[in-house]
Length: 301
Image 1: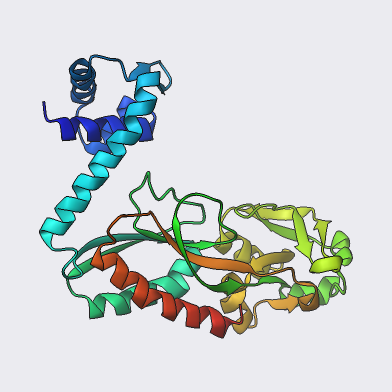
Image 2: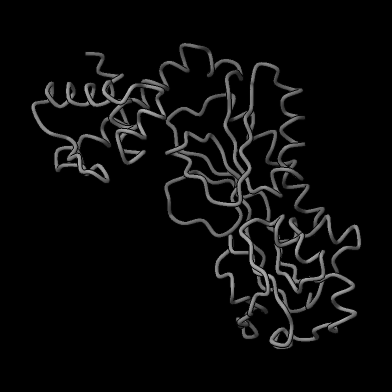
């Protein structure tokens, strides 16, 4: 039995929630997945997983073993990268994630410039308007907008981005321009369901801070969808400044209630902790961070 291979199979099943998920992730036949885990359990002399029809449940022994297995495989991967030279010269592949709009407008151009400087590094950019689990999906670094939970990830702040309430010129001509947040009660609104709270918009800071309930005429879970609705004269939308920048610069959307904006959201580069940070990741962070910081500053937060 290849114990390292068995550990990888076990973690794929635990992370995926089923043997079938591990089979798909590893490109391995389902009976082989089941056999490898059974062989590992036989080797240890204890059951690690309880297999039900819907999910896998860790036994008490499994709850203690899985974190140790992660550490062992992590140290093995570190040793392999060191032997392959990743700690001597930037090389290898990086997986990077950001939101759709940020990835397209800001991250991708910087990544392309990075690739020109570091020909031995390859980068995959995954853009999505939802939070990608860095550990489960083996992501090297992510751009995160908003206040970070206490997750154990390593974070480097690169700036902040403000909130913008806006609408199309045609909509405002037809329905009038709201002068206060409370005026939104008389307007059609557009909710970005990917941000929470989606139907209570905060305004003001300090003693003036308050939330306003809105009734969406349209709601979507991507920035592109809600921007398209706003440009199509469907109502008032609330976006982060980097999301609205292009439409505003083209005159498709007009900012509103600028003096009532809430505190801006911090922007960080985050990555999983590591005893030794590979040169490819260190080089990427040192290259990308100041350039994204400049882009956010030029955007005006």
